[in-house]
Image (tube, rainbow, N blue to C red):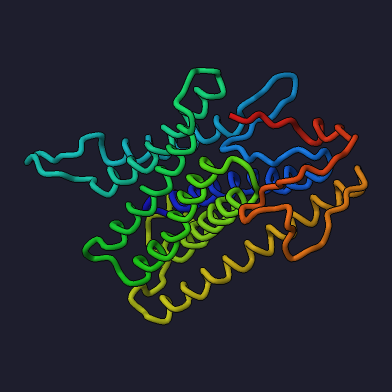
Length: 297
């Protein structure tokens, strides 16, 4: 993780997962106005072609597994030196992050396969993944010898990691509504774009794996202030991106199904989490096959 490609692949992973969630969040929300069904977001989504394929779950297993093996094998597999002292402790911390994400994905896979699991296990393991991610990054940023720039770029996304964990837990409690899913999608998207940007701030990008310094002065307070401003821009542009995705989804469904969503600041038929209390009657059930079929697990 402590290299250009280590940050880039982590960023790409979160960007792809979040865009996948945003697509489903927008589509499912609009779909509630087409067929009158209550929106029930899923912790994972599959693709139904000739058979149900857990694409997201497979992706969530393979990507962290590659990262885990990379951290484990880099510099030797032993966590102690010839004198019996601990080494590779940062690597070990990274491995625990990858390991909990892998565990969450395996629970997802078992649930998809029909293995009897404790209700909410996938949500709790997903929340634990992001909660430990945030805690681990806090202590990672506080390590002795960290320059101010490297410290701030690791501290500033921690609230989003913890908010993602909270949103997943709330989604486990309230299994209907759109806002918990939109919240975790936005947070994970920002984590992804941020770490992709951080790779260029901290490391050289013309060599593999890019462990050398980028040339930025990591002790210059101006660079620290620039990083803070950039994070705000990530929040802004990612929010605009989500709004763009929603508008495009709405326009597509409006053309295909004459969709109309009432414009209001607050709909009394909805609660604070976006749960529809009064289903909208509709005779159009064709949305079952719109783009792809969801499988909730």
